[in-house]
Image (cartoon, rainbow, N blue to C red; front, side):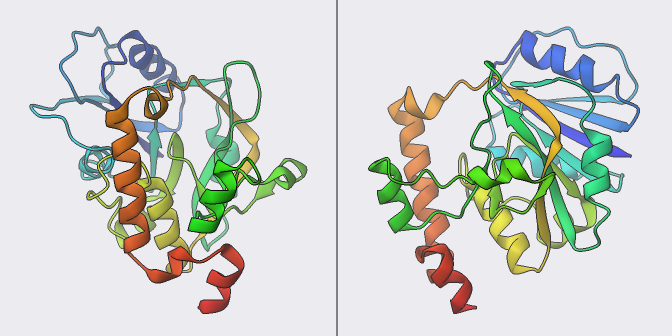
Length: 248
């Protein structure tokens, strides 16, 4: 069974609709919805639904770590409020997690038009970021579409299914990342702990992205600050992928 954490930051009807859809799934043992800012919303009545109202807004990692403290199931899932389910992704993801060394599984993410989003990516380095800025390399894996199961460096945090034991073992998300790069960081720490990460083509969801980081200087500042924090954790993170693996 699965405990799911969803955090709303003014997402309104979107998070209500997602909650209702998630509660239809038989694998869901508990759904924890955190309202990061005050919202008057009418959620479905269900004993599995736990509603948390923050007096002060918290960061992405802090909210999901707080929800994990209420998790009593073997699996823990982080889902963005702007996700839409096409069907039930959990049977495929749970099958992928049966591999003993796999700690994290995620579905293929599509945008609202049905195009594949860049949610499975290579770890960033200063070189890769320059190449991305020059439109020479976006850090994605075109070859991922050719495999039912793919093992990327990291997976974007809009839909992540963890084994609860592994999430607890590495201490969950690093709460020093208020917003952005906490997903890159947790994947890097799982790899460092010898735990696998997989993306499953057979499970698909839709992400109705708002792309706030490109619309606001405040969010761009969060993005830059988190990037610098990510690189400051280890000098190996400054290296391109091939050199990083050789340094271990």
